[in-house]
Image (cartoon, rainbow, N blue to C red; front, top):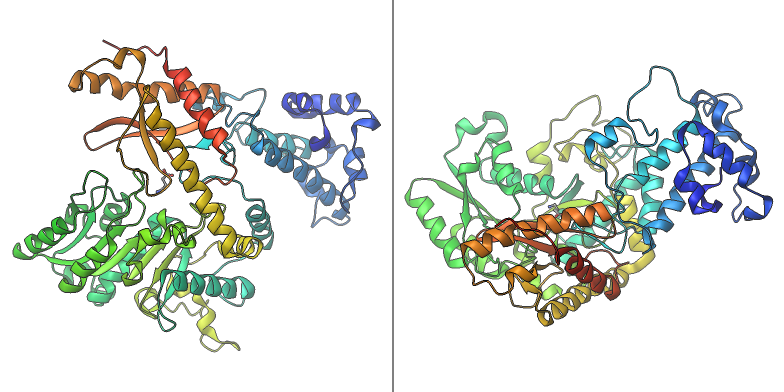
Length: 553
Ligand code: ABU
């Protein structure tokens, strides 16, 4: 069952239960089988029949070592086949099925859980089918999400991480990973521009969690009594964020008991950047109403437009009103790696905290997100609960490396190794060229769109980040005058094209409405595998899918 070396048609049509796998063995002649390229013993994988082997036969079973090796060899073949296909333009980005179809079971792929153990052959087929019906986010034509790409070194790091299967809470169970986290955080703080004496942080599960930490820490900084007394001991707190910022700021206010109504949404200009004068007048209004402003979120790379708020102007306002400045650079943080583009984040060094997701622009596998905090010791003071069963103070090593009590979690996944390994493999310069390339792709798309009469840009200026926002205008709408009727029809275009695109499976791009703008496409580039030919393909694909769509009168 050497999937990597089997003809594609056999891999594609292999059925569960081993029938076709068995057939495929019959079809295979010795000339089909490439000689083993690695030290792994391929002979057992060729001769092994997994249909009568069960998980109980694997390690830690006595004499389970060889069977375990063979099983993993097969699994690696499936994974490698998937990795190679992910980069192949002739292969689909997705093989879409509706939820009810997947639930009903496709070609015998059953999601139901059995009472009796299934054999390893079935498990391997299930593994392959799980990938087959998923989405290849590493495909060069996947433009749907801010996180994309399949970094081979990052993937190796993730495999190693799962193999180590340990927990980031204490040095005693994660000595190497804890030090790697310290080194990565220090490097990222240096890049942000903080001094040697400043800086703390943790990796946590995603940008929303990083933003949640920022609000939690800001509140604790100004009102430490909240930790024991709760919100009843506090005045009515107000925080500020722009209309184009991520919804996680409101979510944080809701989760922390501040309330989403106490988040003031500050107006943006037509490019999606917060207007500093609007921020200042909102702060003054809140104070006049007897509320207590304490926190401002500025965004470096908004989710839809990719806009950068004017950080220095916002920092001036925060300083004059004594407010915590958080910069949500979940998406834009990657641009700090580029000497050409880091100017867009000028002023970030004045932030009290920063969210930065290497799983977005830097292409690290999900998840990899940091919250960086300027003031040392605050994370610990705010979150520490001193559980004696875990964070004993009389351990025989420096227990400041038991970083778990700085976090709001107990158990914490190791998110750092893959990034550390990628950094070793590319160097900072490698990340810089990766980021520059993504922004070049965005500029290429922007230039193409400007030239085409069948597309319209949402904003006319050159993109600051790799987000390019546009409408496809079907023939029937091209001569319509702007107004509610045209907008009503245009609103239907992007979802209809996307539905067709997903059914066909050759590319994937997102769409959304925003403010007074009806549904438009947002193309984002974070995948280093994407080339200008893929950008050109995307435009042709949208135009061909959209040319004949039916819009209701
Ligand atoms: N803020 C999470 C990323 C959203 C996106 O990929 O579109």
